[in-house]
Length: 157
Image (cartoon, rainbow, N blue to C red; front, top):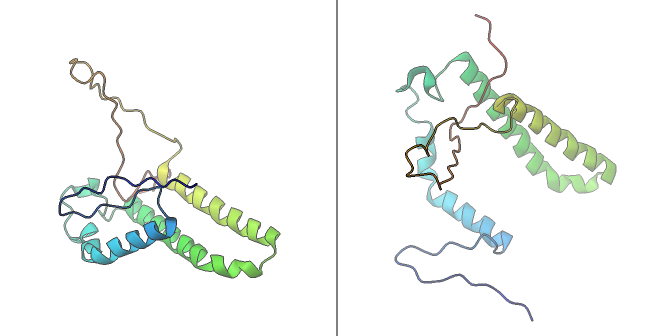
């Protein structure tokens, strides 16, 4: 006998999202429908293109380092899109060639990711949030939400 867990369906006016353990095809369809509904907000990510309110600290500021990072992100996007589109056609390849292809794409992605993210896997915060006694039991996690990363190479000026 199979058991299916159904989360609480009590909700206000908002629809209840699918559980993350749900059917992968339904989850993918739900994500595609959400993208379709919110497509108008996509351009707000890069707007306005001509105002950099933070100056050189802005992610889209046209400095050499940011342009290199954005170019590498575009390259990753193109390579990974081609990879995903090509996967169904890999059925005609021998298994050995398919493995070589997948390893090559993953290695390229990891190498470009290493250039973008820098040498370390994580950064340890040096902000002392527990000295006042109010937040000693809290663990804080910071996720970097910018579109460009660390540039390991120095541009000669």
